[in-house]
Length: 141
Image 1 (tube, rainbow, N blue to C red):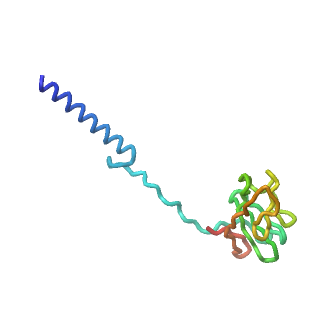
Image 2 (image 1 turned 180 degrees about the vertical axis):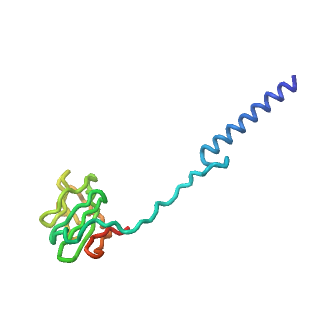
Image 3 (image 1 turned 120 degrees about the vertical axis):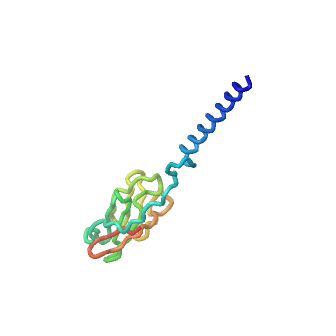
C-alpha cells in the first residue's frame, strides 16, 4: 500500500507542478513563452493638419480627428489648443467672433490663449504645439 500512496502523492505533486508552470506561462512569467512586457508608444513626427491659408485671421479651424483647434488671432500668429471642452469633454464645434465654442453646454474659449470666456467651463483649453511648415500647419508631438 505504501507504493500506491507514494504514487498517488507523487502524481498530485507532479500535476500541481505542471499546473503552476502553465499558470506562470499564461501570466507571462517563465515557461519560455513571450513575456507581456508593455512597450512604449512609438514617437512620431509632426502631423500635417491643413493649409495655413485655410485658417482665417481672427478665427480658426477644428481638426476633430486630431482633437485640436488651430486659431489665428492676428495675421501670421497661429495658436493650437485641445478641441476637447474642459467642462464635459465634448468636441468644440465652431470658431466665431473671437471664441472657440462648445455646442454641448455653451462654453466659450478665447482664440488667443484658450482661456474661458463663458462657462460653464472653468478651465482653459490646454495648448497644443502647432507650427507653420511651408504653407502647412503641423501638429508637433
